[in-house]
Image (cartoon, rainbow, N blue to C red):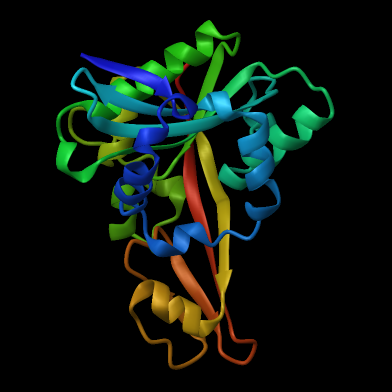
Length: 244
């Protein structure tokens, strides 16, 4: 048996969660400057929307978090992606806007528990929690894992790729679709990560000797390096899915 609990109710898991779940993401993903103005306020306003999935023997299995927003249900009104969802949730809360949509921002399963259906469990549990708490629409800006093998392919093209059974080629998209999700739209600029050349060399383990465009480990698209400006810019694409 498994239970989805608010992270605030499981402080004993915090240290392990930080270690287990951060290792599942490339280092550069944590350097979106657009997130910083909203990070603390998100934690202050929406502590009830951060969760741990724990087993009956009190083992930490997975974690996820999201934010509530107002969305009119159309593709045109979708946030630009991850960063824009965070900004909309915080500013809308401050303006007194009543939300009707839950945005699942991130979900991760600890590495030694993967391949056992836990991703489906945590996504289903948080979706049901959102609907039960007055957020009948559930969407997610999804980071397709296989896209890093095709960094030169536009996200608009990648999201149309399917297997012979009609399911998405990407395994993370497949997980969502098997749970009933539908693909809504590309989010070609879901996040923007910037840093100095030396920072990008540290984050990627690569060298960038000259100005140009580079493919990077775990990158869903390419990194643009400007040596003269000492700046690397990476604009990450996601795919919008709807769960409810």
